[in-house]
Amino acid sequence: MLVISLYAYAFLSEFILIYPVYALLFTDTGLSVAQVSTLFAIWSVTGLVLEIPSGAWADAVSRRLLLFLGPLLIGLGFALWVLLPSYWMFAAGFVLWGAGEALVSGAYEALAYEELERRGQEHRYAGVMGRANAFALAAAAAAIGLAAPVFAAGGYAAVGAASVLACVLTAVTALTLPEHRPRGGERSLGYLAILKEGAGLVRRDRGVRHAVLLVALVTAIWGALEEYVPYLAAETGVSTATIPLLVLLVWVGITAGGLLAEPAERLPSRPYALLLALATAAMAVGAISGRPAGFVAIALAFGTFQLAQVLADARLQARITGSARATVTSVAGLGTNVMTLGVYTAYGAASSYASHGVTFALLALPYLLIALLVARSRQ
View 1 (spheres, one colour):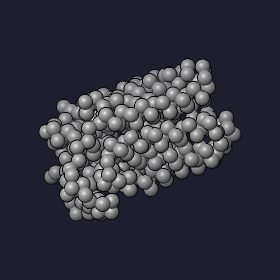
View 2: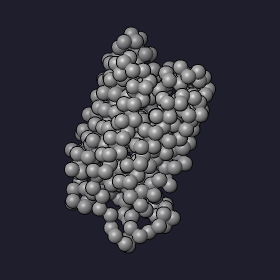
View 3: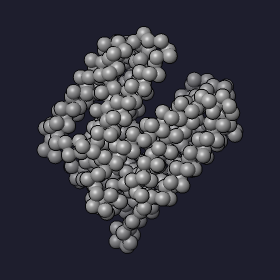
View 4: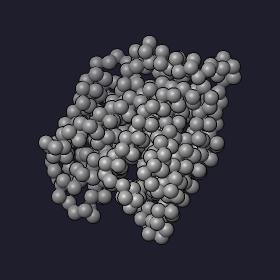
């Protein structure tokens, strides 16, 4: 039941039909590009501010509770967008969305790992999370495919209602997740004590600190670059109708990477580092080629980075001890968000002077440094 509920939660949380069209809603409401940019900033800042506090709350209270509340906040934000479209309602929706994501971040991984550990199956964590990511990607693809006909039939109201329904179903699914927390002892720690314990663990334990940094670095770079894949596809000169097919190819690679997590879970540090280095080379060659065929290499690179992300998360979870698991995981989430913003900034700056292909290649280079540091590590 645990694994099935985790997969259902991952799928439903990404089966949001308003994703592909909410930018159009903003435009049709009369917002300028500058105003839309401020909304994205509000979204990002909300997540950054609440990431660690919400992780500590999950450890102090209940991870299942936060997994229930998070989607409801997000769904409420979508409802505000559709029912009361205006700049301030969009801003309120993004605050709710950022808060909802922060509640889920850390709590999902912590609950999954500890429930598997309670069953003596913590070795399955990487495989389970890899498949959960694959279900999430499949849901996003399905939502994109369904958004057009649903929008044509009922406009923003229809895609909004479908998105709110998906959020409610996600929350209901959270209630089916088992959660066995200790009574007294660790569970009796208050919020501030949990927050202090999590921060102290990251500060004192070198292995945990390195694992947190690895998760943040591996996740942030490819996660940010993925947003620019359509621009890279357009630069190859293919028709507009072909661009989604190249993007789909990349998604297939990412999905495959998640599905390979279980057999690769016990990969030693040096082979792990070699995978990162090979993926960097594939990304650079595929991006600089400027040809549609180069997307085969790009898809392989993205798939490998996804695999590396899942493995990095599994190694972090295996190193965390004590009652602040969600808090420590949220520290990694905060690092990921900060570094992602850095990659966005770097991409924007580089794009004024270089092609998308060259920019992709340059921003993938830090993976070589990460690979070198992992290879030299004794962990």
